[in-house]
Amino acid sequence: QVHLEESGGGLVQPGGSLRLSCTASGSIFSCNLMGWYRQVPGKERDMVAYITSGDISNYADSVKGRFTISKDGAKNTVYLQMNSLKPEDTGIYYCRLICPYDNWGQGTQVTVSS
Image 1: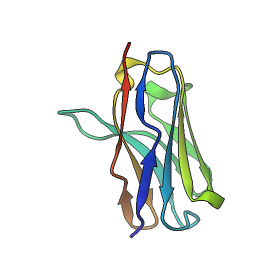
Image 2: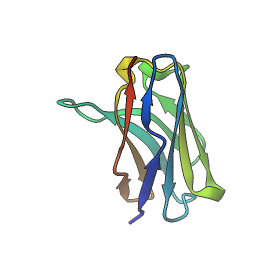
Image 3: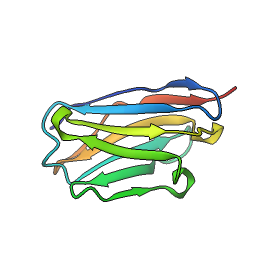
């Protein structure tokens, strides 16, 4: 089991930026998939972005062109750069690593509001 520590959430105005970080307790080189998911009250947890071990990335349509997922193997960290934030981006963001077991972080709150 891999322990995940997320950080970087907070309150930001519309149009602003945040960078989320997810640091794993072990190496991420063996991880097949690393991603970020978002959940709002009363709704299911949805995929926002993921990146594979082969550096193939995929994004939800709602964030394409605004969010970028990346990883740093030396730091065992996955990032989500979020630009041009909108109120509908608000939610709890969870990091997920499949290495090969499914590991989830505790979540970090992102609130986009004026």
